[in-house]
Amino acid sequence: MSIRKVLIANRGEIAVRVIRACRELEISTVAVYSDDDVNALHVKLADEAYHIGPSPPRESYLNIERIVETARKTGADAIHPGYGFLSENANFVDACEKAGIIFIGPKSSTMRFSGDKMAIKQLAKRLGIPVVPASDGILEDADKAAEFAREFGYPVLLKSAFGGGGRGIRLVNNEEQLRQEFELSTMEAKAAYGRAAMFVEKYFPRIRHIEYQLLRDMHGNGVYLFERECSIQRRYQKLVELAPSPVMEEETRHRIGGMVVKLADALDYINAGTVEFIRDEGTGNLYLIEINSRLQVEHPVTEMITGKDLVKLQIHVASGKELPFKQQDLRINGSAIECRINAEDPLNEFAPSYGRVGSVSIPYGPGIRVDTYLYPGCNISGYYDSLVAKVITWGSTFDEARRRMRNALDEFHIEGINTTIPLHRFIMEEPAFSRGEISTDYLDRFNIMERIQERVKASIQSRTDAIAAATLIFTQMSRYLSASDGKGMTSSSSSSNDGQRRAQQDRGKVSAWKRAGMLMLARGSMYEV
Image (cartoon, rainbow, N blue to C red; front, side, top):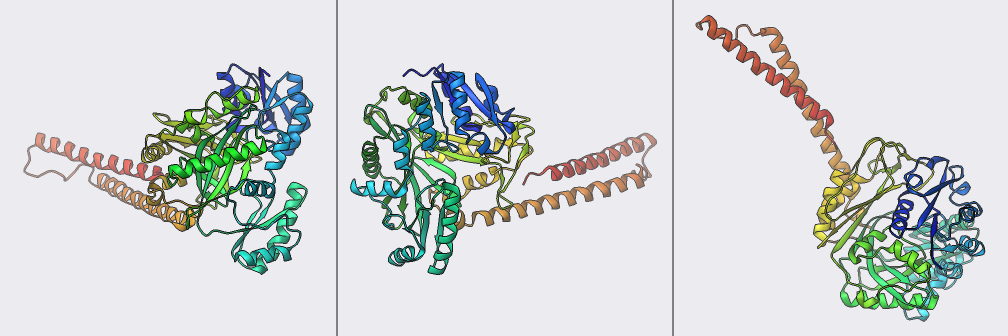
């Protein structure tokens, strides 16, 4: 099962990430691209690159037939799906298997099962793994949903049994809202997944999102590479990730990790995956919510604290080899933070930003890693996910990783688009974050967006004051210089030579003030909020 050539069925930073891992393994790579990505970095870096369709994802990166045919024609042994797009599509796995191509991920049967959140929870219950209290089975109508909601007490979460990445989740506060949202959610689920499968889940007012990195080979060897905390979110979309979690105790870490491996054994799970939990801050209890049968966006923080390359390990496992280490060989070393840099304007309701990038200044230094597809002149397309880069920092302590992240963000400049860098800068200096006091309602609980807006207003006022002062100095000194022209600025009793010398000195002072005013004006105009 030796893998010699890999087609990457993805784009952006994850495609670049996989290509670089393959290079280290001396494996040839094949990139695929749409119309919008003709000049993308992953196309430039791959050994071969092939156009697969127009820019809309359904006509390119979601086109199973065209991707598999491209892999077959190029002689690719395997396909790496990255994350998103077809990474959790069991039909895609079936198509790869039918074409005799290795899919770098779990089997299609496992993927179908793990993609059903209700089925996973029922299996977890049988294995003694705690799960969030929820309705039993799929709810066919709003009446049944209302019964469970009354049992749990409002508010509750209305969820689709399929989907991921925070999609298909609604917080409802009363029965009237539940009935309205049930109808809307059902229609959306049918449109997105071809079928509606809704359930009601107990809502915890304050939680942390904690997930475990899983790896298991074809020989039954499974390990957990500890936990990540992904609690800082906006509308169920992760913004900042940490490894390890600052609240996880050693006994709990290994007890839950053992449960994760037990679940993987029951599923006969192969390759990399993530088992997600929520932690009720009221009790400290963890509850399983779902499995993501793919590589996660935030996998670098796990790599930083374990020293393991998860993409290379994925390829290693897909080749049929045993994991080169055991659970007892794994140790946590230090702390890591990841900030997702999205092409969105956090000061304007996270409005999307796309277009041509001008200059790019990427940070580097001890403990700093940047995964990105950016380069000067590249295109940010409006057709795809807004993630343009991930900044990851490592430190011997959480605070060292935080300070390195703060400095890295200060050095990261992207010209031509708006990004979430200002938001991440603010978070890295925010006292509650520094103390590790985070939860999924962090942005709202600590009024982060309002405080950023206040800082921006203060910065604008400061800049306006600086410009006004500079303008006043500049104009007043210019008038003074023009009016006096160096005359009348010396004593009448001075000798001719002394008078000329003093007049030159006075003109020099005025010119210096004028230059100072111009400099202040320029600095005020260039002040960065």
